[in-house]
Image (cartoon, rainbow over all chains, first blue to last red; front, top):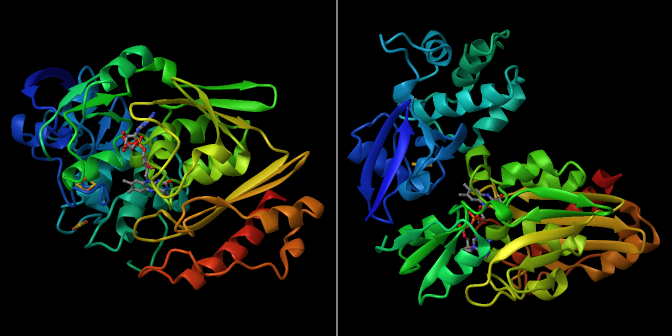
Length: 161
Length: 261
Ligand SMILES: Cc1cc2nc3c(=O)[nH]c(=O)nc-3n(C[C@H](O)[C@H](O)[C@H](O)COP(=O)(O)OP(=O)(O)OC[C@H]3O[C@@H](n4cnc5c(N)ncnc54)[C@H](O)[C@@H]3O)c2cc1C
Ligand code: FES
Ligand code: FES
């Protein structure tokens, strides 16, 4: 067991982890923060995307021990303390960017990473950036529309309208 | 996963010492190794994480060559290898953004997956693989699918790429995995052209020497007219037969030449 200490959504947390403890297991099982989802566990689906030191990573494919000392952001830290949704989350609600919601935590975290680096992406850039985030419900159009809206741009009219 | 310990050394020397233990294995970005461990296809006693070693990160240019630290992520290369645009573009086309934020050039070259992108860039550029112990020319480094010249416990600390006059990498993506079904890297240097092919051969990445000769005489897609490869020894699977891959190699090579301009 190794002792790890990291900042999660601004709060310092620590725990003893085995070498093979995944970051997503540490978040969900040790910290009981179950907002980060596990869809595939094989780094394909992106439901587990969190930010580590500001970069989007798949938390099912990183060990907790490697996040020792890191600054981690998860979906739980996106809304304000009083529950007010952030711009991206609100846009997902306004544009019906989710159905079952399973992919949504990863979609929102990927979208946040994209908009941090590229505040006004084109629709093609949004679709390209979401290559590693799979949604089985929406067909993606409304997710793309939500992200375009969150970036303060015109929202494309698409077939799913 | 079986159980193992993780060490996080901060220097190459400490990592080499840690890897001397029996059944210790290097951990780069984990984008290949962690899925392998989950399938219980590997049973290391200890993983030696290379991600905290700052001397293995960074990109520097000296004259006509670009040196990339072995621990540099694909995302870092995509953003920082502007002096060699075809290489930056290749790195930016690997997997997806989250994979690129973890996966490293050293891990990709050590793994030498027959469908990986970096082996094509290294072989196609005539790069030099720098380890903690020696320098290995790309022509000697790749020794068949998942096989390289690396010794047990040897670490890829850097890769030096000569910067060509023109180059391009074109990959035909396998849509589910996003790896190359076939990928071709073409690089034109003052003294000749190199063409490296990934995804196609059962022997892993290889140089297509007939195409190199034709392109060295005339660097144009037309120069490749009539050249073809046999499907024998090409990978055949549910995504495509060997003959289909052989055909794709010729098409992707023409596209790469056109893209290099
Ligand atoms: C969804 C997905 C899509 C992908 N798509 C592509 C793609 O399109 N093209 C492509 O090329 N790759 C692709 N990959 C693979 C990705 O590029 C990996 O990052 C890479 O193959 C392995 O690098 P790593 O740093 O993650 O190494 P690890 O997984 O950590 O290690 C791989 C192997 O290399 C060894 N190793 C690691 N670093 C070093 C080093 N510096 N020196 C010596 N040995 C070392 C390890 O011991 C292990 O045996 C994809 C992966 C995923 C999950
Ligand atoms: S659960 Fe991590 S990518 Fe699917
Ligand atoms: S909303 Fe159901 S998977 Fe995306």
